[in-house]
Length: 114
Length: 112
Image 1 (cartoon, one colour):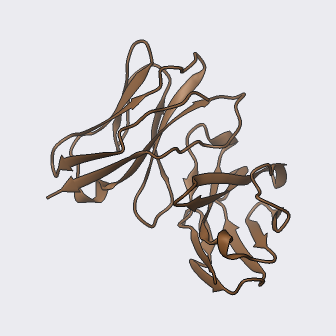
Image 2: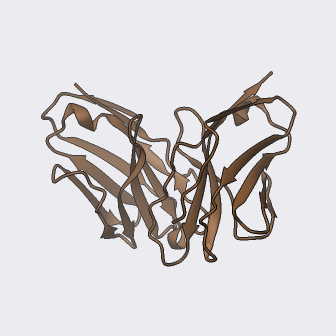
């Protein structure tokens, strides 16, 4: 398996633009997580899905952020409109049965909003 | 989940064992100790986890004290590629949530 695949690896956008981050989890994993990492706040969980259903989105910072998982092999995290404070590295992770044997993280998307 | 305390940084010579400590004095009976690491510019990587017995896998060994208030991650023969931030996370299963509290971790520098 190629692991968790995220795209793009880097994204530079102007303030106010819509940004869409993409994630392909490991086949067979039933949990998918979106994390954000900044120097100030470290790694934060934004939202997670179980069997394609959003379970907890309490970490989503505000209504500008939305996430979907239309099927078991694809998820998106959208920011509209983007702001400079959204600049961070966004990680997607997947796991089997809640992650007892660990989560597998993707390589991340580095987002810069100018 | 119980809070963990780790030293902010450590050094280790290449080829030597790296012993990374973690304190979790408020750990409760159903909470596991997990270790992850994050190599620069990569996503976190699961290393190992345990409840109360010592555990070993191809990456590392985990030693948990008998009172479970602290643990040590051991990389038996550290290489330059082991330079990373190591996170000790306590997680109660299955009733706790799925947010991993990574904290600040220990930045391990392996030197030639």
